[in-house]
Amino acid sequence: MFIESGIPLAMALALPDKNINKVYLDIMLEEDLPVLHINHKKHLHNLTPFKPLYNGDSSFWQKNGGDEYFITGYGLERLKELAIAKTGSWNITVADEEIIEDDDAKLKESNFGIEYDTIAQMSAEEKIKRLDQDKIKLNELIIKKSKDQMAIAETLASTTSDAAMINHSVLQKIINFADEQAKAYSREVIIHTNEIINSSTQLLSDNLLSDELMKTITEKSNGIVFQHITRVYLNGAAFLAYFNNKLSSSSTLMKIRTSFNLKYRKFYQALLPHVDSYDMTVDHVFLEGLKIIPPDLVFKWSIGFLVHDLGKAAEIEYHEGEASYDRSKVVGHVKVGYNSIIRKTNYPREAALIAGYHHEYYGDSDGYGPFREDLQVYKSRFTNMKQDYCISCEIEPILAFRTLAYFPAKVLEIIDVYDSLTDTRRVYRASMNSEDALDLMYREFIIKRRKIDPILFDIFRAFIRDKELAAARK
Image (cartoon, rainbow, N blue to C red; front, top):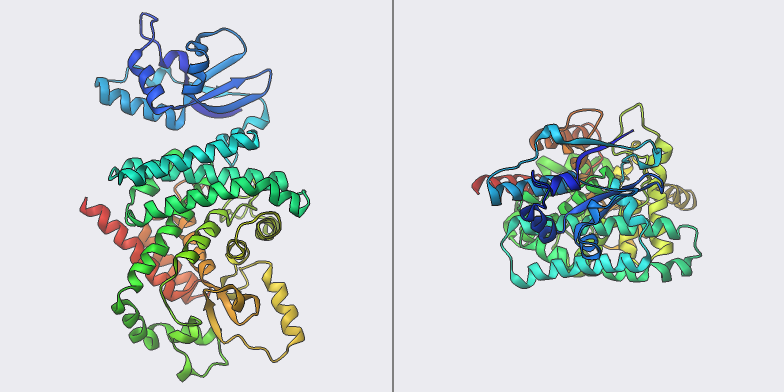
């Protein structure tokens, strides 16, 4: 069974005279590149940092026995890139590369990626240590006020992916624990994840328009699910900062109000038909108005963006082709995610609500979520109830059914769909460029169906275009 391509570590680190290539060895140590460790008898297959293995035994890859070591994927590309930069050449030809195979079906790379298995097998202490190391990496960049876009991108990508994988593995472990036992087990992971989110959102606020982030994530990540979660979190947190920057300018809100009647009224009138057309304004769309998001909500919503899909199972893909689509599984991940976060962890309620609402689509038949049933029960008891607003930033109006949607969940819907359309690793049809994806979203999700919010979508479109303009200027 095919796993991935790579080369034996012994081949990568050997000179033609069989001595050790000191340049390549130094790169492996400096970058602490991942090594794929395989032991067929033990059914062992995991990615391990090079440096700890080397510190334990400086010739570990040269020993005979059941253990095999390879350099693959990102590690191989990074070694090649730095080797060329330092020596001007790469002396291992493509013909020398091997296919790493294993007949154990458990070793097949799933939508979760190879590295997830390694993280899932870590002890609780090891997971905390990894998160602590990630936090240190982020804080070092902040303290240095680094302008190295590549270093920032790589660190944000790797630390977010670690946090997502560790949180998912913990939720999988505690899913059948009693609630209080589960909360106690997950407490330290949540504390460290909160610290990572604090640091990463601070870095993002200074790098809002860096398109290098998404490119780096694609290169570094090998699990479809966690690659998606990482991109959505980083884009979501960056968008919230961008949104606040735009709203700090009075001209943005003025433009929305000025164009509301011509551009937006018809859309919202269909959502709230009982509201008189003359009364339909921005203030009926956004309860308490369209305003800057306070820092405490930015933080809580960013947590929600990171954990929103942690109910996703390995066999579920994103926006599947018809052959693999199983609606019951897709719908179930929202309920599992919401219930796990609200009952088994101490994450804020806002994060759980984002997980529960992020596929509601303004009540469209394609949408789903655990609150639809609750709303129908409520309507059966209070037959004259009306929802007078479209979106709320606060939890209470949502839980009291005063509004149709939750602000961060509507943001997440947009980013979620955009990411699936532009994802280069989709298997059932080709990915789209940004402009084609945005045009399709406007046509299919706003004009033909009322799924995503048009005002938030227009601000998101400006966000993507500004990122591309910033990239073009470099």
